[in-house]
Length: 146
Image (cartoon, rainbow, N blue to C red; front, side, top):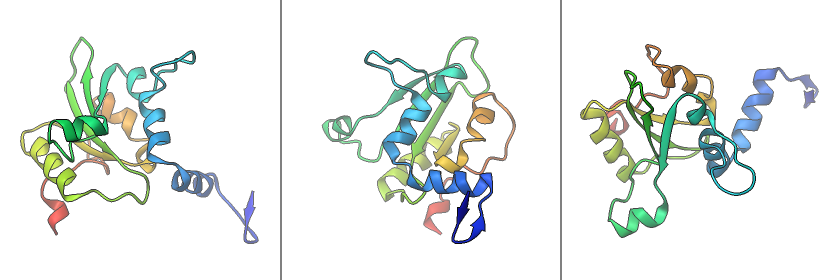
């Protein structure tokens, strides 16, 4: 494939595709399609985790604006990462201050906390399998303030 007269590598093509992915499309890739006729597990279920997605209406109803998108619990037998929290963003998405405060709280409490973008697709299975880091998508508590 070519763009502007030059050959594109697979990495270039993937980066271009990732940049066009919406947050809801990225979410479906991770958590699958849970309802309807077409049920398809996502990356998270395929690696032995249950997932809770926090919907917008819950944020306002319980006054928890910024609560991370995904809360994952490993299925028995429990792993080193029995609980994982992740905020999902597109390649250009920005973490709000409220989201950063929640992510900090989880990270400071010792919960593995991540900011997952489509470019982190390859490391997510490693995280879910309990591989040691460091990981690019790991949330560093307080780093957003710099």
